[in-house]
Length: 118
Image 1 (cartoon, helix red, strand yellow):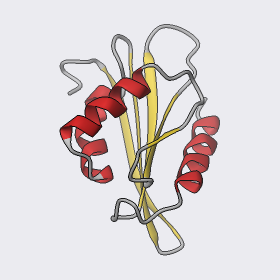
Image 2 (cartoon, helix red, strand yellow):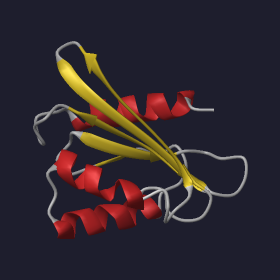
Image 3 (cartoon, helix red, strand yellow):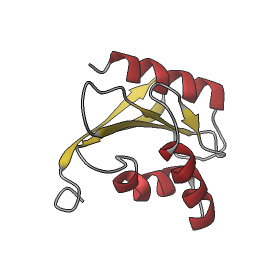
């Protein structure tokens, strides 16, 4: 993915209590930074291709700092504010079971983590 869309990817996994949390941050200088993360978004949110396409369109139109939670409720993406050209997204997924999370909680965590990225 980085050969086609030069940028940087940082991924980490950690626990909040007993819940697995996965965070991906991808920045690129050219295109929509969320697109290379599409396979991870689809898998972690349990989306079909139609839902994924709609979600990618929604995130592509989003402003910086606005968390967009998937219908499954366990994943949120936030476009990061940049001081120049390019695009960057932070994606947060909690747990292994789509639909098992409080979507407001997932969105709030994504927004908080995105606010810490400078």
